[in-house]
Length: 525
Image 1 (cartoon, helix red, strand yellow):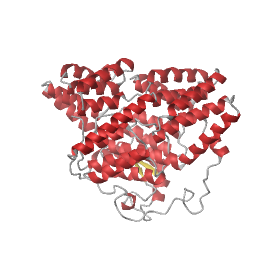
Image 2: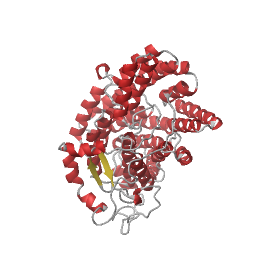
Image 3: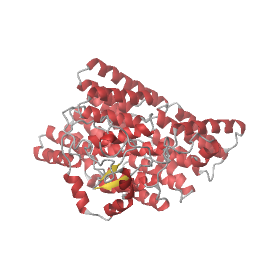
Image 4: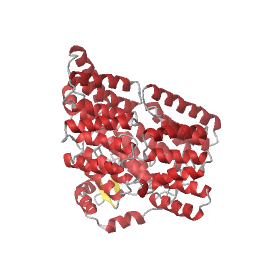
């Protein structure tokens, strides 16, 4: 069953990094970034062997669900980053790779990086409307490049004022619509999505041709609502309007992924990197590489993204990505450091708080895990995170709290549906493991007919298994995991689900083989 399991952790070396002395300090690692990243990209197998051979300990806690990159893919800035044998060794803002970098170490923090927010001599970073508008065009916002929360608030207020006084300004409507989408993604305020659609359609009415900004905004809106057929239509229109515009290719990646068209994902990524090789594009590349099991390439792409440091919002977003990568690799100590660094850069980073909740629960610190999950939900309501918290409660024997939390999930799904957001995967997972598996099958069959992506194939296969239809379940599990059938994604969860279904059918040898494969992808599953 898909749920939460807790075991004692014997996590790899408590800090896994370097101290801040003259021989192992953050400055030295920053200076070596380019050389080490190049060394990795040149294929030095010894570095890869060091990474693959260095795992220790065991953590077993998982929730069947989406790959790490479900949330929006954004570029970020790392303060001191080197590629080390397939992972990203990041010297976190709170300290080096040693104890000072751990959220639970109790040690002092390293001095702020010169020029960073809060560091001595750093320039004031109060929001300036003109500067925010210049840096945050509609297409860039739609593609998930972060601005700080205060900047986003200024941008929304400024564009709302603009369209009141200049209602025929198509560009202002496009930026406002994209900003509403970004605010909804960041805060969970799904009521912003109908506002975004109204603003974007107003922009397209005023300028029906040559309006790639509004088309990018509509693509981002459809992706956020998990309406991937619509995202594909809008995204292809945007590319036709402006073939050299990198943001349109970035948004198409989500649409193709949601529809299970992974060959198109690779082709679109190539066109994206041809159009732009900056940090945002590299962050999208890292997501695709990771999804394919190309962990070394993903790490190198993140290192490239780190080389062009930006705002604190971008920094926090990339810390979250680094934490999710470390968690998928089964490295809870590193993941915890990265998630903590993200919350230092952006105290309201809900993804980072939810990530910390997963790590804490997995390493036996369940009370702290509950608090982290609740903090994440207080900052941004999320049906997926609420479901994980409910499963954590259930694993602790807190049946009443779990039932209440599952009720919260249903309410969040209802609110999302009212705003046009498709939460079929979350509802399917809830019903399959904690409700009515037959209902889960009905929900996910309808989703499969509409957009047959691999996430849906895996979820439907698992729901059928939970409903007792193991033979049919295996067909969908094979679709999700067999490259010959389109299963391009290498996911430990997908392969584990297939192993469980095969075990239920008495296919012992195949179940054993796929169980071992799942552990090779993620030894800590």
